[in-house]
Image: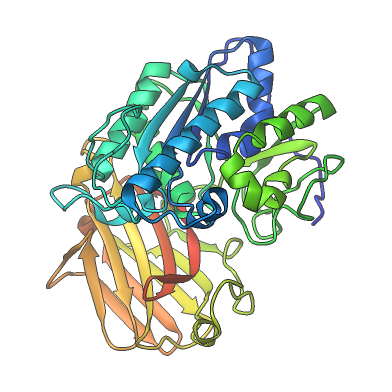
Length: 439
């Protein structure tokens, strides 16, 4: 990977208040360990809020415990281990325990909560803790149900209490679902609080194929953005001194449960810089039909995820290209082209979540248009819409949807994404993007 031009730098100001939203314990160190050190050295107010306790990392836990950790109480115990590791790691970077907040939502399930668990739907169940509420007594709100409104409320509480000027949060192009969801909750929370605060947003990337490269400990190298995202928006860099890299390296080793199995990945973030960037909003509307075609974050058909089994690889369907437009009649038109024909086993889903500032987000429609080679359906969360005015057309390798904006609540913004999957196994996906509508 090469970087054509130097990236502009992230600059901390004397009056800044730095808030870091981390999906899991260890993300705060590998993604923003240098930023934390700089803020501490300047005496700036700084706070870190963790979405989860990272209690679903079963492979690491098996190595850490020397035996499987499958019982709910044991998994919760590992969540507390990761809590303590985060306290120790951030302590090395200069933070005190009171500068940390843990929300306690289920590891690897928060994107499911985002897509399906709004309103009066049953709370989501954690995969291993087998609970539907925050089980940790040292969390922000123990006993809180696993619903999207609760996560959004907690993110807004953290923002209101701390009043940041700069917010560092996970990137929408990250391939970990918790990283995607935390960005989405943060985006909506900041829209809701726009009259109270307008901090600058700095998303950080952690999980992306073949990145950082080369992997392993290379403190002499800089880290450019991955090739697939390099041309998407503006990337900013935060240079680190060798002393800051060494302290960051020492801090990440306090995440002992992750270090024993994944130290090569963790050490890949010990570079001469930290990276921050966002996917730009796509503008739709105006005097002419707005057309937005994005290809930068789509994987090509030949880039098949290596973790798939042989039979899954044989059925793999990727997203080749997608486009969005308004047709002049108040309809959003989305077209997806696939690398191979869909089969009955492969599901393609497109998500459109409407937002407008005068309606609570929980009450806005959250559409999921899905199809295989047999049928299609339109859902609002988990509720199937019968007689929906949305039109779904499909051919061998093409999926076209026409969605009236009224079905999305006549939004000012839309959060959209697309993905393919085989049962519960994800194949390919398009990063969540913000669509801005000129109303």
